[in-house]
Structures are given as structure tokens and as C-alpha cells.
Length: 177
Image (cartoon, rainbow, N blue to C red; front, side):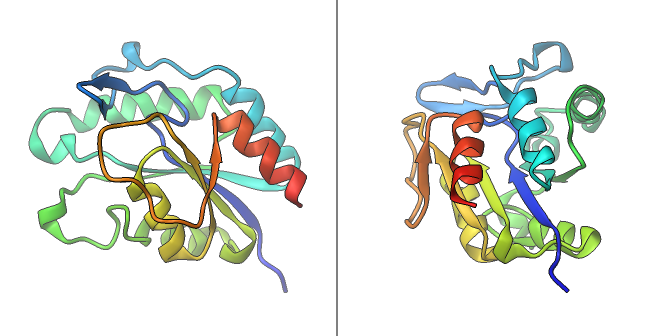
């Protein structure tokens, strides 16, 4: 039996606008500052209508470092779930030093969601805006779509499909089916 398809989504920079300072992206600090990017709700609806689960997989290390509260991150996620066709949100609150299996580029969040929802990773894709996202896509065996904002940081390793936005990624994904 073939499993379900999933569209794995990074949060900051894919669903909502990142705050960019000195070429580096940062998450919004409050739910009120969370700005959904243009076309995102419609793109998620199109993916769902095509049979994809929409699963957010997000690194949120600011909780571990005390720059962000878990309650505020949960408020943001509650807002996203209430206002968009999102099937699940998986978050890693660790920093690199924790060496966990869930912090991207490790595939833990994708593998956990795949097991929970019966997802066939070979039929799935991930959309992200950082090298860690594409690294997680490679590690999990899903197609990677990279939104290149030109951040001043490490670039992802190929292969991936370069796109301008989540709506662009969904259009590419659905055209390739």
C-alpha cells in the first residue's frame, strides 16, 4: 500500500516573514508580529486539494536560549493552525550543542511525522529557505524546494529546486506530478 504524500514546510521565511538583520533571518518575537507571506494560505489549500498533508517542521532554538518563550511560540502555532490548512506542526527547541535527532538538518521531525501520518517520504517534498531545511530534505529522502533570499550564511547542497516563494514551490510540485 502506498502511503500518503506530505508537503513539509519550514515556518519562518516560508509561511511567515522572517526578520532579517545583517543578512541573517530571525523569527518574529510575538504572535502579533507574525506576518503571513503573500499567497501562502492559497498555496497550502492547493497542496491539500492535490492530496498533500501540510506539515510544518521548524527549528525554534530561541526557546532553549531564552530569547523566546515556549508560550509565545505556541501562540504563533495556534494562530497558524486556526487560520490555514495545516495538518501538524513539529518544532525542535534544541540548539546544535544538544545533538538531537530533530534539529534540522537532522531528519527527526520529518521521520516522526511520516510515522505518525503514514507518509511515503519518496512521494513528499520540503520547502525551506535555509541550508538546514534542504539538508533535512536530503536526510529524509524527500524533494527539496529552496527559497533563496540571499542570506549571508552557508548555502544548501544540491540537489534542490530553486523557487521564489511557497506558492511558486507548490506550482512546481503540482506541475511535476
